[in-house]
Image 1 (cartoon, rainbow, N blue to C red):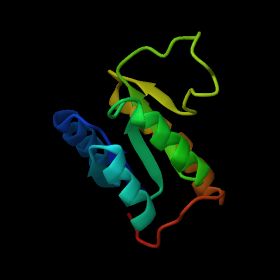
Image 2 (cartoon, helix red, strand yellow):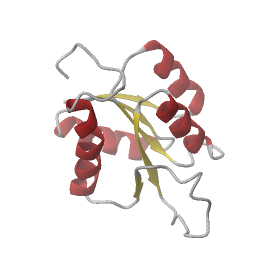
Image 3 (tube, helix red, strand yellow):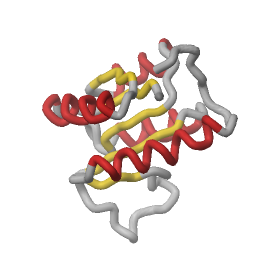
Image 4 (cartoon, rainbow, N blue to C red):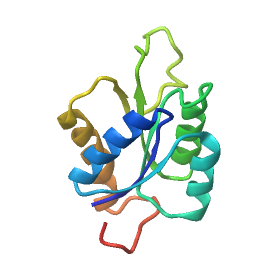
Length: 129
């Protein structure tokens, strides 16, 4: 499966989502803020980012954009409704609203993994994660 960076500020939610991802067979690296996530981005290859939209002070959207610009597939989680009047330019490509079903998370992960398995750009790992 994939190596996934999970950036989530709430420790209970972070552990819960990491457990779900591990059950799906993914190798999960966890962090709680933009600084820690940014270090992971430059020091360790991974296939996808799962981040909270807010993190701390809207930093999740910054992290999502930075990773997408590097060709890293990104899934953004949010506990608040993303209104239609908010700018489409700032709306993350793969947005999953909390609470979500396990099957919703898996469906979104499969969608971001599909381009990788078809040979699109992005950082690949040599491990069998």
